[in-house]
Image 1 (cartoon, rainbow, N blue to C red):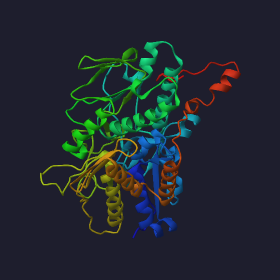
Image 2: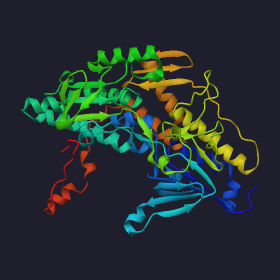
Image 3: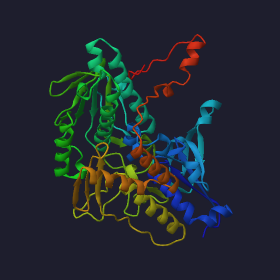
Image 4: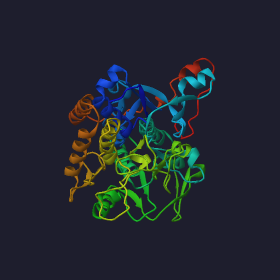
Length: 455
């Protein structure tokens, strides 16, 4: 099949990067063992984050370490490089990488040549030039942000319980979420559910003392589950005294005051930004063709359009949806497509190496599920609409089936089972964010300040 040693470079360790490497590892077992092929995975983190579980990790339903999959353990036949690609010259088939060692050594970025390229860097949070957002906003895209937000919410309840200043108390108990997509709605639903449960252990903080506000610029939330389920979600959230504001934008959050386009002003110490994502910056640092949204132009076979030996899928790729009735439609940049695209992509790379015809990616979107807290959810799957407990149960079953490796499935299932038998954990471990703070104080240093408001 392959007469000389070749290198397959995979940029990104998310859904597409992990599943593509797993597929190649399985399909090219003989070539990898003989040394004819080398697979290199470049990722900024040594793990893949299963993002649908971030809201449950923030609520304490799942341990943070079970939300991530260690790349080195599952990709035992690949070379995993912890670093980032800063530039890719596909004409020369060379990638420029920075690793943890380059800064320590004070050396220049490394040059890595390759024969086949898989670009799967994912996406990053899309922010707007809102005054104060960079200083006080909190994201919700990584496991670190999810756990930090959990600690922060519980810490605000501690502040409110301890202060006699009504202004400080009101700001501490006001939580503003911007963005009505999956991340914003699920994070808000899970954290509000957790905070309402936690309030029973405070003598002077009640659930009705807290203000939870969801800000969405469009006329609906959760568009993936359909208009009817979106309206139900708004009704369900408002029934829980969550202030859902549609057709509303965040104008400013300077000085810890959230100013909305409808004129409302909310002093708050918690502003969570989940208003969409944008393509990873590495795509603009390549010589590969991009569409008007900055994503890679791809063929139905998941190769980069007009270029040989380059492949892409997931958030970074604009893949034609050949199952759609209207022409020109692209597959949605979500986990459902990313996982399936990765399998087709891995198979097509193997077919390309063996001179076999490629297979087009075709998957009809089956629907979506979303959790709104413990035992609450919405779902629109195969045309069927579910809400409440059935939707929440389907949400858990679906994502348990999709989380990688049997090891993680068993651990998550065990945690859910134990959570059903015992009470919720309400502990804040905010000190994890500054593990050296206590020692620095003991040694005569200065305590670090958290710009997001945590002490």
